Image 1 (cartoon, rainbow, N blue to C red):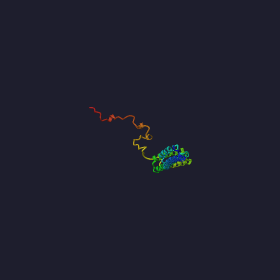
Image 2 (image 1 turned 180 degrees about the vertical axis):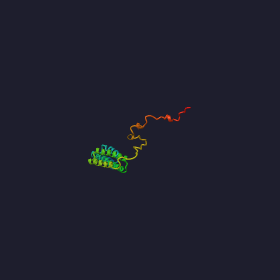
Image 3 (image 1 turned 120 degrees about the horizontal axis):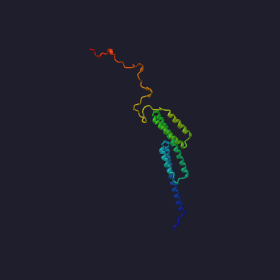
Image 4 (image 1 turned 90 degrees about the vertical axis):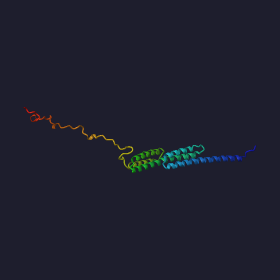
Length: 203
């Protein structure tokens, strides 16, 4: 039987190692591309799409062939980008609320303020800097002081009430006035019989 030369065996090992290296580089490129996509979404303040992108990147990083130090670096990037998406979304919601306040759209203003507060709390839970919350609350306060506090007239939430209103009890007398007894005769006068022409004359 022909013997395999040591040189040929080493060449096969090198080829196998090269193929594995290329596979790992491909896996790393896929992860990097997924994380870069998350970065694009986070900078746009698109929270829901950012969360979906993070899950996609995390799935790609589960391959055991990926180097541990590489996955640690990309995982740290994802955490920062998740925080970035919520801080950006908070700022966008506050600015939209200010525009609604300037347009005197009270309902939209309160809706966006509530949304901004929820996004802010999520950012705080993701270890946002302390000055972020302080700045966000100051901007929200400015929004609340802008525009009308209560919108006049009917709204979608409170349409015009066309039902008749009950009388105001404050302007109604407690009892019905009765005639003054002092100015009323004790009895109804009867006709004077002496001048009553209805008497029949005597024959």
